[in-house]
Length: 63
Image 1 (cartoon, rainbow, N blue to C red):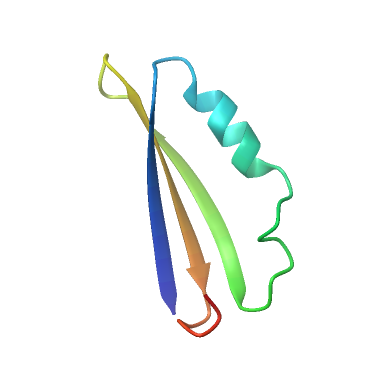
Image 2 (cartoon, helix red, strand yellow):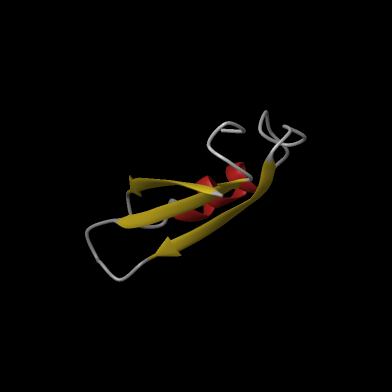
């Protein structure tokens, strides 16, 4: 299994828009070898918010 992680830093109050965009069907959906996509938000900082997504693949070759 291969796990791809991406972190996006956004201004406070904007993480919901990013999560909504990642929650919609996109080019990854239906790709062979894709297991799932998990999106999480870290709002601990008052200066910014982090949107972190994990994309799990069956293998590095599938990625």
